Image 1 (cartoon, rainbow, N blue to C red):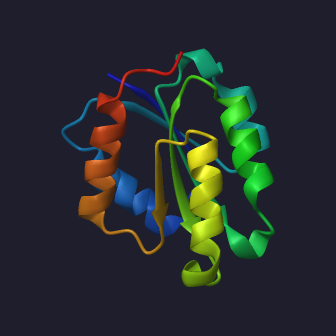
Image 2 (tube, rainbow, N blue to C red; image 1 turned 90 degrees about the vertical axis):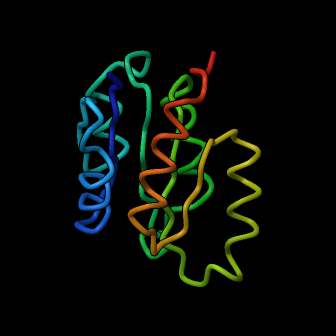
Amino acid sequence: MANILIINADANLKRLIKLALPGMEHFAQYSATLQVASTQLPSSKLDLVVSRLVADDDQGPEDLVELRKTFPSARLIVVAALHDPALEGEKFQRVVRELHIEYCLLEPVETGTMVHTIQAALALPKRP
């Protein structure tokens, strides 16, 4: 059983995660923001953090840095809603690699992709 924290999920992401988790016995908790999330569960008890970043909320690489800093040992899945994925995607992916974020999905995300990504992330060894 894994402890999963979902941050800044819109209705679509919540639906995808609910579809992805049946049959898996995990404890999922939702948080509206990273600041609220950092006070919910001790980061050492989290196995997986799924965080949605939205470009028009002026979220950027600093938010990814803060996400990794807040949850250093958790496996991370970032779901990104970018204005123009073709233009912003390369820079965003570079930052994701530098921060050792396990998975980055660009919206729209299909249910099968979310299921596979959550399963793959949970199969990875926990970060030191």
